[in-house]
Structure formats: structure tokens, C-alpha cells
Amino acid sequence: MGTDAAFLDVGSSKLLDRVTLERQFDGLLAAHGPALTRLAASYTNTRSDRDDLLQEIALAIWQALPRFRGDCSERTFLFRIAHNRAIAYLARFRSQPPTVEEMEVRDPALDPESGLAREQTAERLRTAVHRLPVAWRQVVTLTLEGLGYGEIAEVLGISQSNVGARLTRARQILRESLEDPK
Image 1 (cartoon, rainbow, N blue to C red):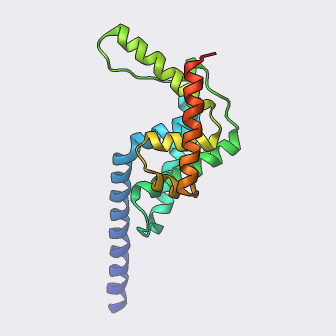
Image 2: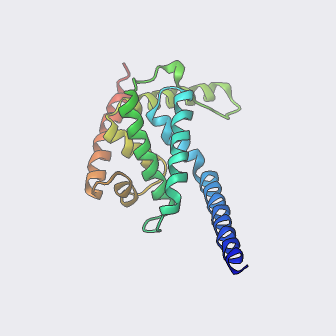
């Protein structure tokens, strides 16, 4: 009978850990899902590819979550996983730059004229960012998600000064590309 009680304690402990893990996972996806979706979109050309990559990212997060030690913020942890999945995705599928028809731009503006202007600007920016080399696109995307140089450096495994150099060069290329549309 003592053995059965010990078995029940271990079983209920594992169930409790699983429930805690599921709650943590759900909370992380609820809090960071939109940012992860935007990150996935920056590496893909179509909505279905974005959704596939996002699913891979979510699975990788689920698998890695039990090993999260708290050495960095949860946000940095998630973006590091997302970055690694996205790089693996690019290596597998060698994406081509998106066409304007494949890009998705949502605009909640009530004024159709200003909405159209914002949509066109967003399309030009998205196309310009997507044309950047991957190393620069990563830094721009993570910056747009509000990560600081230190967090970006940790996510990408590079130095903060390298983050700054890549971001400076990417901004220069974006500025030139947006001033002189082809």
C-alpha cells in the first residue's frame, strides 16, 4: 500500500507540473503571439507559410519550455527560439521576396484615402525589409518588436555593437530603398 501511495504522489506531481507548464505556455503565447506572428511573417512570403512557421515556433517553444532556467527574460527566450526556427525554415525553403499580392496589410482607418496611403507605405516598407539580407532583416524585425540591443544580441548570439552596426546599415538601405522606389 505504501508503494501505491508513492506512485500516486509522483503521478499527481507530474500532472500538476504538466498543468503548470500548459498554463505558462498559454500565457506566453497569449502575451507574445502577435509579435511572434509578425516575426514569422518577416521570414515568409505567404500567409500559409507564415502559419506553418508559427506552428513550428510554437512547437519548439513547447518543447523547450521545461528547460527554461530564467537566465534571460521569457521574451528573449521566445524570440531566440523563434529566430532559430525561422533560420531553419529559410534553410529548408529558400524563400523568394514576396509579391505585393502576397503581402497582408491590415488598416483599421476609417478614412479610405488615408487608409490607402498608409497601406501603400506599409507595403513599400514590408517589401523593402523583406529584400534586406537576413542578418539585417532579423535586427530590424526584432527592433520593430521593441527589443533592445542587449536582447537582440542575446537572441541572435552576436555582440551589441554588431547589432548597432547591422541596424545602422539596414536603416541606410531602407532609407535609400524607400526614397527611390523601383
